[in-house]
Image 1 (cartoon, rainbow, N blue to C red):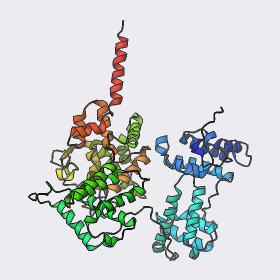
Image 2: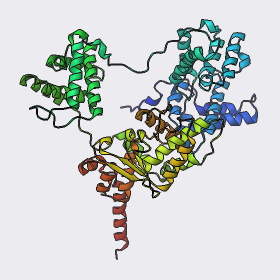
Image 3: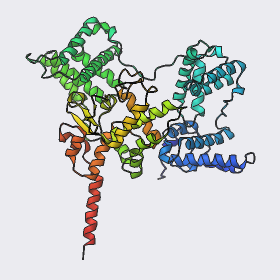
Image 4: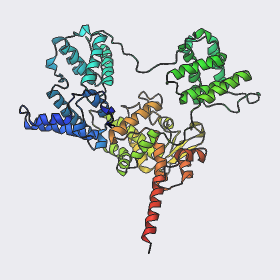
Length: 566
């Protein structure tokens, strides 16, 4: 019987005749057409890229579609490189590709443009617009190379540009560059005089399930509004009255879920006019039909959203006083689609926390705020520098106060940052502001207070108008930044500065990991730190995080006993 080596799936879509990095490095060494300096730089770039991928040059194919998603995941800071050094390495590697005709040579000099394109591009450069220049440069040169006149640009040319990016881009996302180019083109119509008045359509990158509520009958809309009002202002004396009002966020979530489920029925070819009330949603036939429509999007695998929707329909049937038969059927559907309760953290969070167990990675994260605040604020990029400080301030607060991102984004300078006059500053969240309705209070460290005060004296007017009462405001100052926007910013900032993959919620896990590593079994302090209402929840979520320190202590105990043997 002949044994066969497993097929290398990592190379499944790479053509068999594709050269490897090692091959073109050898070709470069014997290429007399290059100067010694240029040859050395190209070989160095290829070697650095293969080292960043953790592979020998013999195993890295010169295939842009293979390289692009892998290089896009690399954070230069994690490799101990500056962004510029990494950019130079990738540029040198791409130059080697270009030298042997593996990708197209980039053409981006203004003298390469036709008269029409040169005139328009000169206007873009003269405008100093920091958005249009990087978005449109390659697109404009591509259109010029394709001999497309400015007034003749159409959607098919944008599609061709996307195809060209997919074949020739080795580090950046082709889809992101394509969407930026189309958005930049459409923006230039308003910002650049003489720009062709041609709109390039851009499909949404999201799959939209929910349809507008206005498409449903008025009776359904009234039923929905009545239910939300009932959930928000219950009658405690009614026989079936709720014990307490639901939180506004919970009510908004239920509203979205019910509208989405009604929309799923429409996608299953039920006319919107037939959905004339909430009673339609809890009809067992309709409920199963809508849930099957949701399952069709997930390969018949239940998800947390599907399970929650089925449970919501079950509870809605009770509120609407449906018959026992209906309620039993919906209870059965909910049981069948229920997902297993989460115990502990997700694998992704455990993997990210494992990286933070390394002392060097911890130091990069812990020192991030000080590094950013120590930088000078240049006049030429004052906005970017102040935005970096705002992100660093958010990181500094989360390191000492592991609150939820919604609470962080909504911090009010007077309500949540209280200064009693003795030099202390307390971060205070009242019970109505927290998820489990328990007040939280932190005594901020001196260095964090200094960062707050420094930032507040320098942030206006670039980040917000003066007298803005929010610590993390919207740019118009009329309210706090959205939690999702701040969370995305922090993830990007941490990756750029440290190379670590970390979201805002992971700071809560990091805080508990750090505490339990130093104090195995110290769950009561961890519970208070996170503001959990029950210690059982803390133990369920974080049991095992102290395993490293516990096993290390046990190993030390055994070593001591062995050393004491006679």
